[in-house]
Image 1 (tube, rainbow, N blue to C red):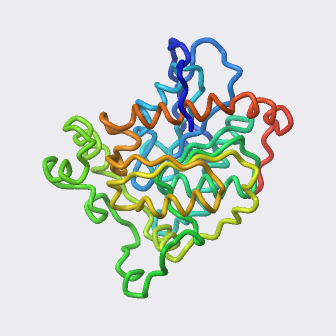
Image 2 (cartoon, rainbow, N blue to C red):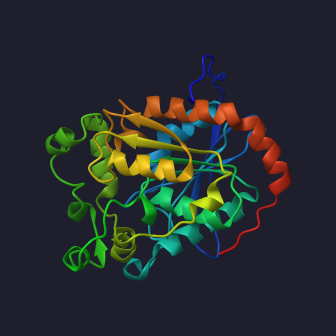
Length: 298
């Protein structure tokens, strides 16, 4: 599923950016130079990340006619700073709403990690044309177990890449992420160096963030799992897919970061995503005509 025999012709693209006031959310855009009738894509990063994780995939999709908008959640990369000690998953959902307001029309949400959970939370309350969830943080109903108090207390108010295990010598990281080459890992470690993340939102995810998946039953959805993912086990990704009634793709040799930016993985993932989008674009375009403009409920 999701594969196409004849991929669309590669087009020239242009890059743009927007800083959305008053919320201070920054969005980077890759889009075809020729105006496309295809619906827009909103790409939402995961923990400690930013729009930079999508650089290659966003360009790939734009070259094939899809307008790709990669946002930065509050307190991440080029968006405004935030009090991450008090930031919740609902705040991240609201950041998605800000970016959708900027687009002004329904979009397909593509989320990775906690960005995928924020996308589901947004789609539970607002119209979207589709969901593509890469190694998604599972909603409450897909969690394998609940944490004990000791595990919750061990999460600091704000954590960094070292606490999460995403720092260290490149050769050590390569052992855990073999689909990432040296350049991938150097880029990852450089951009994660100053990144911080909300411990409160982490504890919420551990305890379980409820998402009423019955509200998403009519939303075309695709979930992608990674066999070498140490943070979102592929069994959790599969449970999320089952809850949504979504299509499921599995990359046994992919790591968590490799799914979105690993030189040896992301092109295959992007091809699957593109094929899935192309198969559904006519239905999405028809749906967009009945849903536009965006009506955001928080």
